[in-house]
Length: 595
Image (cartoon, rainbow, N blue to C red):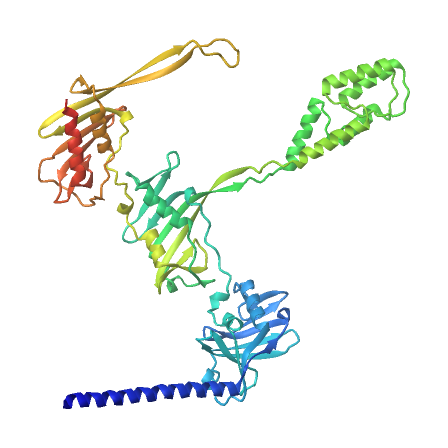
């Protein structure tokens, strides 16, 4: 009974303390609200306003250093480093954001600026206009609940403004946030033809067979087929590369970023479609003119040249009246030189003969100026119809040097550029941190059944042979008609008959053999051994292939452990396949012999 009384008393005491604390907090909050209400009411007041185009310089703290950007002829520069690649859009937006500042709240008669971190502001922005006026804006703490900032203006030590974050946050960045960064080369992943990686712990080279679109690993001696899906992932990563951040626009010390001894070097070769520029227009025009003169065909551009030659031979014949013989000679000469004789006076017979000869030789009707104008107009319309530009594939490449770690990134440099950027470590891992074996094709051995000639299979100490024969015959159809001549023609049809012989006897039911062969042909391993493998037992199955070209290969199956069988191809490559997969293979083989 006594214990219950004590517990009750203690509970009442705790309750009283909690109530007191609650009312104390309530009074404090109410007091602060009254205080802020006395200092400033919610209102909208213009703090600073200027035409953004009239801002000539912006001075503020960047990476703990006082930095000044100046505008000259509508271009922004870093005042002490004119070569710095200033991002014009970023600086223009920064100037625009601060050109009009309105306060949502104003606190007058502030006694302690340290309550708003304005005694030691996180930044001070000095805005200078073209007329020389300077305005100093001090940026204090951020109100996390409203996402607004406290600022003060010029020498006002007892007045604080609450302003929108967008007015001051453009001035709270690092230096290279104000730099114009380059872009990584845009590469179509399907156009990549070669990839090589050089690292201290291993290098490799991948090459695309452009005839088959298959990828192979090459080391100068051997050629290894690679997994298409894994290579597609790699080329896709290269095609979508973009820098994480801009670090240095003018690197003069490779050791600073680890490029004196790179972590890795990635080389990529690819093809890019470019427009073929037309060149030698004047030469082509000259050649066309020469052809015109040789063939006796007058073109627009050749009139002047021809007329000069004709002047010495013909003279002025526009209004001359000549007898029939002279006029006939002149008409023939005129046709050969193609001079326009618009107003010449000829007799009817000679003019008709001359016109007929001109038409037959040149195909040009020069009866009057109207027809010439029509022809010129047609030529002009034809020239306005532009053909699609001719394009060609151009071989290109780039080299990406990968340097030291910085946070979650690594420094990178492209080719011989002095600009330094970063890429995330995760991105780099996908590019260069995999070994050659990660890209191997795990298909054990693929040979199309259409290419199979002979197969020997040894299992349970029994060996059987399968031979594939193919016979091609042609049949003719008498009902076909030649589409060009309309005459009856015989159309040939080719038929191929395939036979499978098991130990010299033709298989009547080939379904079981084809099922077995498909399972054998589609074996995909779960892993491939890189270390040397020496089996200590007899192979449970041996399959010898021979294709139609006489090329041979051998596949041996050994029990590897409790989960896998080792499939050894040509005593060189060792694949690990699931035991269940091997069991299904042997069961399919046994069914071949069922009646």
